[in-house]
Length: 261
Ligand SMILES: Nc1ncnc2c1ncn2[C@@H]1O[C@H](COP(=O)(O)OP(=O)(O)OP(=O)(O)O)[C@@H](O)[C@H]1O
Ligand SMILES: [Mg+2]
Image (cartoon, rainbow, N blue to C red):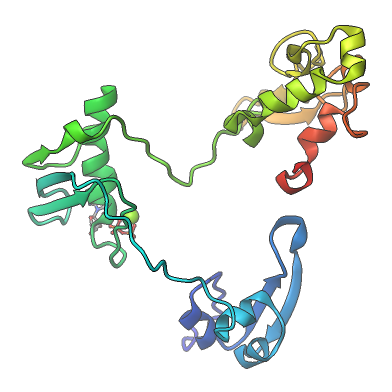
């Protein structure tokens, strides 16, 4: 593509790809608020000679150790036989249980067809009455060794303003308890529910705790605008008066995980 006169820009972690480039940009130094700066740019040799986390890994000074011991597993196994969806050719898959298993192969080789489209729907139908039909297969054995299946992929956890990483993980319950335990909350008789933005009591009633108002657009996706009553804080004035180490519950929700810790 480059030789055809194009400019090719790739976002890549792969060492060989990085070192083959004509011009390399390293962004960092860390992630989130700790990043956002261009650390080096130029020929790959320039990055290699410089100081950055990327450079120290490329030079081999920093490395991620390969574990010396591997888990043996529990001796049981799950066996899928005769998988033949898409390009799969009568595949027999034997999975040792109680271990961390990785399935690898070039793009288009059939990993997703085997795992996402065959194995997962079989398990999901068995344990949870899932309705997605698996791609063709002959037989599965070993289901009795499992009690559930959970599919984790890279799709976002939900775009609703009512869900965030702290509500999703359950940590928000602890944070609400913390606020309810403060002396000022006790004096006022505030319970943990006061600090929820999903129920009436402590939340802003104009936006019902969403912090934003949804405007439905006929042919376009909904538009969110900041609530003018709470300015996006989700709570009413009284609730925001309760502070833990100087921060209100709305301040807490604005923090990164690192800041909160
Ligand atoms: N829905 C489909 N209908 C028909 N053929 C498909 C479908 N999905 C994938 N294939 C074909 O099946 C083969 C295996 O694709 P699959 O997506 O399983 O590979 P993969 O190993 O997961 O690849 P990648 O690393 O790109 O995710 C490919 O030839 C692909 O074109
Ligand atoms: Mg895939």
